[in-house]
Image (cartoon, rainbow, N blue to C red):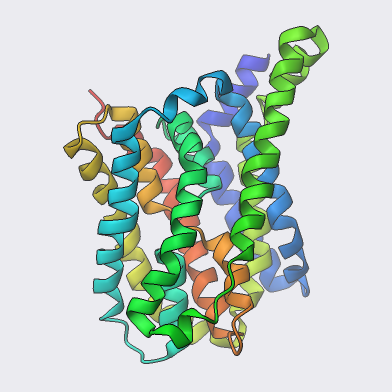
Length: 320
């Protein structure tokens, strides 16, 4: 029965995710005050990552740190080539609005550290390598984002951005879920009850991911508000990024001769951005509301749809 349920959930996951997104959009438009669900985004992401970490042999994670070529591919794609793509795209934005450009750069220059692990796992990529690399990705983007912003805007704009949310994200979306997953795996190795609990939690990755999609979309759609028109201006550029970025990651990974599953992980990482983490950064910028969060939220919605497509198409990369 367990294997049947897990197989059905995985087989119909794309439909489940689309249903979650469509339902969330409908509720956001029909029910007032759904933006209060914003406080549930981090806990739901933590749950999703916890059940995802349980699917990964954590004892093998240490080996990922020895994969120098994988780390090199991640760094080259996310922090060298992707920024060049973003620098090109921002030149064609049909607006001179500073907040639009700042939001566009904030979200596209920061690689995802949270649900990309789940999506890559479902998308037949090496999620263990990506999981082990998330601390490095977070630290590097914390160091480089001020540099990127100064290059584009100068010191005055870069100094407006605070970086405490990056630390919070690292603790609550990486450290805590990973620690809990280790405890459950240790419990499962020593107890039949623990083993049953671990097996039961193995059914949750797809429902937990659907829950995150539902909460995020329900919470963020109302924030588009009065800025919906300016937010729509950047949608075509987000689509171009969503189409281009995974191929950048794939090509870089293959150039450094990574195996197929690792190359898929780089493709996922290159395509997914840290929108949920940079949103608090944006909200702390004076005069940011409503334009700056709307620009970032719009990217979230585009990426959620794109990620569902990635989970179907990226497994075909390198398939024989």
